[in-house]
Amino acid sequence: MTITKNKVALIHYTLKDESGEVLDSSEGREPLAFIQGIGNIIEGLEEKLEGKTVGDRIETTISPEKAYGLRSEENVHIVPLSSFQADGDEKLVEGMQVRVETNEGVSLADVAKIDGEEVTLDLNHPLAGETLHFTVEVVDVRDASKEELEHGHAHGPGGHHHH
Image (cartoon, rainbow, N blue to C red; front, side):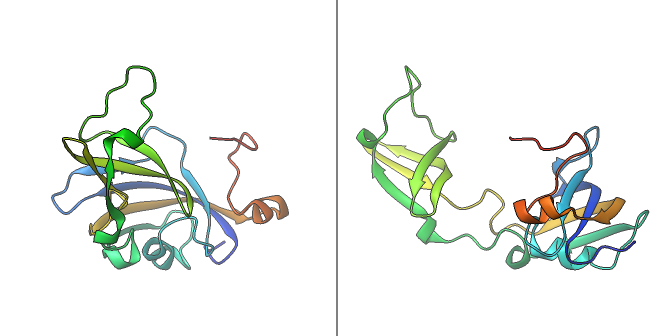
């Protein structure tokens, strides 16, 4: 069976950045399961996996436009420090991630800078602007169940998990 729209594919993958550093890998974990063709995974990877079958291995380089997009200065905001309700004694420090309410719902932002009473938040995806290098092995391909298609994501071997 080949990977086409609405098929569930299970892949093992390793993701590296331009310098060859491993950013993410499924090694030692369950393979990643996703439904092809509906945006579960980045566009560039969907394109490369279309038509592949079990046992196929691919190495591919994906430009930011087909991965997590380019960095946008519109996603960088300066907000007053006072707008953060500290959880307990947790102090806001540069480099930490915070949850922020946006028009699209809750999003993760990086605290890029703290300057006195001003906090610079960066809502760009951490991999925005990055060219990604994937090594992928196709482990399994099957039809998506009606339930999976309704939910818009693949369910693991153990049934439905909530993360």
